[in-house]
Every structure is written in structure tokens, then in C-alpha cells.
Image (cartoon, rainbow, N blue to C red; front, side, top):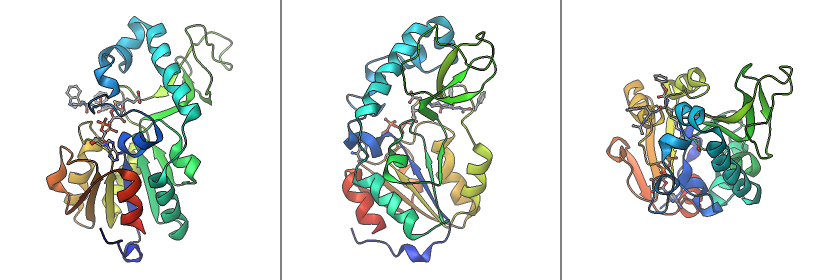
Length: 235
Ligand code: BJW
């Protein structure tokens, strides 16, 4: 693949999913050995599952936190951070990932639409706090007089993804939309490429290991490991 002339674009939106972190050792959800083949998503990634068995949900996310503490960003995250450094103020990364590998690589204009594993929030007062330690059913909120308990600051099925207004605004105004490492099965993120096309302003690109569910909606597509195809595309 030949690198793109990125100078042609002024408003770049990059959507990332689990595939960008796969080569950093963090499992994806729907691949052959993905997380959803090992656990029942209704049990660990829904508010109902958390109400039924909070201990099991905490165990699931504590194990993921442990993986995150050891994980290092890879060449794909680094390439996106360089892209932002070369085009200050023009690149927005919208990630579905709850890991912190974009930040680790140096990306600063970043929206975590499905939350962050390194944070917790109170089930009562909804205050969000940095928290990479393990959580359990006795983890109490420091600011509501020890009445509220903490939950992972992640977005489960049936919950509203975060910062949707800012994302929708960026999607409607962008002139380049690049989707990286996502299967295109979870909404609303799976619908972004259609929204970009409706706005009619942007070139659309999919970079993934294999064609996603919505691949035919992208004008340009490249397939391979993110650590190879992302640097090749942006540089
Ligand atoms: C590589 C690679 C390499 C591998 N290089 N590539 C019908 C019934 C019920 C609900 C719905 C329904 N229809 C729609 C919904 C809504 C629902 C939804 O979309 N469900 C679908 C499954 C059908 N969505 C929601 O509920 C969302 N909220 C919402 O819509 O709110 C509105 C609302 C609220 C209230 C009332 C009414 C409306 C919330 C979705 C939250 C998703 N949460 C999770 C868990 C987050 C926490 C955690 O991490 O545990 O987010 S689920 C999981 O999937 C995670 C991911 O961010 C998300 C997307 O996965 P992703 O990133 O695409 O990963 P994979 O594994 O699917 O794909 C990896 C890709 O990488 C593959 O393509 C590989 O090929 C590729 N790859 N190695 C490059 N080296």
C-alpha cells in the first residue's frame, strides 16, 4: 500500500476497535479466541448482569486490568500519535477500546466512547475517578459518605456510549474517516460510516485484518495486521 497524502485532509476522524490493540496482547471480542467466546456477554457486559452478580463482573474486569497493566502500545497506536503531532488540532481518535494504549502512544485528542478500564465510577453519585486497582463489591465511593459502591467506568450493552454529541459533530464535519480494527457489529459505532456517507464530505477508509460487517460502505479498504497497515497508510 502507498502512503496517503494526509496533507489533503483537515478534519480527520479515526475510529478504532479491539483489533488495533490485538498485537499488544489484549484480546479482541469476536475473533476465534475472543473474549465473547470465553464468557457470556449478558453476564459481564450488561447492567442486568452486574446487578445479578457484581462479584463475577468485578473478577472479569480485574483480570482485564491486570492485562492492561502489562500492555504496551504498538506501531499502529504510535503511527496515529505521529499523525496527530504532524497535524495539530486536525485529528480526532474515537476509540471503542477501554485500554489506554492510545494515550500511552501520545494521542491527546481522544474520545473513549465505551469508557476506560483505568477508571471507576460511583453507582450512586456517578462521580468518575482514576482507579487501576482491583475493584470488588466492597469498593466504596470516596465522595458520597461511603454509601455508594464503585463499578467499572465502561459502557455495557443497553447503556448510552459517552460523548456522543461531540462524536456526531465530528463525524458530520470530517473530510477523512478511517475505521481501524473493528468488526462493525456494535452500534452506534457500526453506524458511523453510514453517517459519514450521508454527510457527503469525507473519504472513507477501512483498515482491518479482514472485511468488517460494513466493509462495502468504505470507499477504500486495506487488510492486514494493524501494526503494518496503519503506519503504511498514514505515513
Ligand atoms: C485486527 C487484528 C489486527 C483482529 N490488526 N485488525 C439488538 C438488541 C439489543 C441491543 C441492540 C440491538 N441492536 C443494536 C443494539 C444496541 C447495542 C448493539 O450494538 N448490539 C449489537 C451487538 C447488535 N449497542 C448498545 O447497547 C450500545 N448502546 C446503545 O446503543 O445505546 C443507545 C441506547 C441506550 C439505552 C436504551 C436505548 C438505546 C452500547 C454498546 C456497548 C459495547 N460495550 C462493549 C464492552 C465495553 C467494555 C469492555 O471492554 O468490556 O464494547 S462490547 C465490545 O464490543 C466492546 C467493544 O468496544 C465493542 C466493539 O468491538 P470491536 O472493537 O469491534 O471488537 P471485535 O472483537 O468485534 O472486532 C475486532 C476486529 O479487529 C475484527 O474485525 C478483527 O478482524 C480485527 N482484528 N486482530 C487489525 N492485528
